[in-house]
Image (cartoon, rainbow, N blue to C red; front, side, top):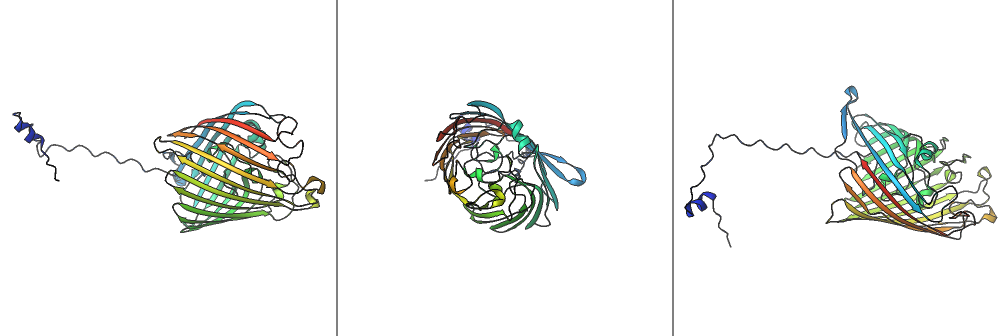
Amino acid sequence: MRIRTFSCAAIACASGLSAAPALADDAPAAPAAAPAPAPIVLGTPAMSGPLAANTSPAKFDAGPLGEIFVTGAVSGYGQWQDNVAPGDKAGQFDLSNGQVFVQKTDGIVQFFAEVGAYSLPDLGVPYIRSGLATNDFYGPFSQGFLKIAPNNNWSLEIGKLPTLIGAEYTFSFENVNIERGLLWNQENAVNRGVQLNYTSGPVSAAVSWNDGLYSNKYSWAWGSLTYTFDSANVLSVIGGGNTRRTSVNTLVTPLYQDNEQIYNVIYTHTTGPWTLEGYLQYTNVPASTAIGTTQSANTTGAAFYAIYAVPKVAGLSLPVRVEYISSSGNAADGAPNLLYGPGSKAWSITLTPTYQKGIFFARAEFAYVAASSTTPGLAFGPNGSNASQTRGALELGILF
């Protein structure tokens, strides 16, 4: 059925009213609205969601250097937990991020620099406040590298690099959850070295020679290969390890993990409001008199991540992470402790409701860790004898 339409003039005439005079042909036209600026997506720092970086970052003309982008992350963190370890606290507030990122993203010569303070909230281990974490881990200049990109396929990075290993990034704002998970405790986060990248169509690959868990001993080799089947399905395979034995043993460079071999398989699928990711991890630490082990040990872990973007509430997401990890060996045979004692196991669940509007974000978190086959003194609580820990957390901040 065709629906008839009527002009305003016809309606006015039918009702006995005078029609409004037509506009003159030479009346000036209203100016066209200026098109909205295209969003700018900066690939560094990398972010796995649901938080998203500012798409209108500050941009400056640096003369011969070209355009320079300046962005950053500022966030506060509150935490409550039970079964508190010695030196930790049941409740506390802190700065989780106070960082500025400066980068050049085009041309043959590019660079990235990350400067500021941070903490590294992490499941299953005591919380280290930002003042100590910044100094004891990667310093106030936590990441930074020079990038040589002669074309769209190849690039070379040199400096303090984000790791290729794992499904979680270094800083809280980059990740699905506020706290990194149990599998992350087996991995490094930042390394000094050189990395060669290649991209062609659906294939991305990288190889790196570096100092592993920030040991300043350049003996680690890594490789990664990613295949993008389509916009909804991505598979990554990553592997590497220390090519010799090194004896560095510090907070940022645990002795056993710095001598391991590590392998990951990561699969990501997106459908509608859902983002789903499965993650497998295997590590092996050899028997070696150089590091004081007479028996090798390994860890086997798996994690599942899901993010649900609530369709009817813009900016609201409901992420969840579930993990399981087991370690081999026993203390009597001289196996290294890779978890909560040789041969121990653990699982966790983490829920992190997240809301972001523009550059502002807020997220809460509930996390529970349970361990088994633990060694007395190496688990949770004041005596290291508790088998579980529950945490609640809150993070508020801006990504400018």
